[in-house]
Length: 85
Image 1 (spheres, rainbow, N blue to C red):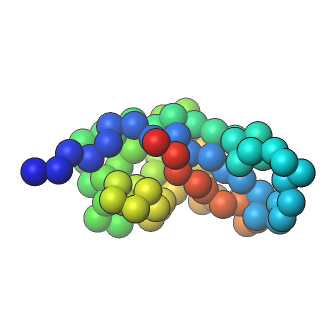
Image 2: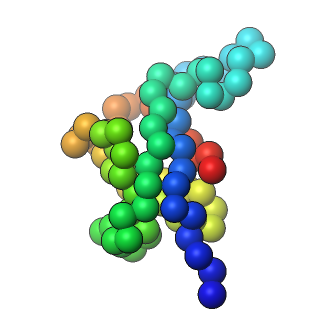
């Protein structure tokens, strides 16, 4: 039996950033949040994680964000959500 991670960090990074000039992805993020497992499954069918104004359905096997709300709204155009453990 596999156990899904209980916590992830989500980074919201501008898509247009091509060359970060040596900066890390974390330093390029316009927002970050630690999200915790709720024990529920989201509409996407993946586990739901919440924290700091972010609600995300994350595939824990691939660390892919399958659904995301930021402060109750969809992600703004031009931003990408990245997941770190």
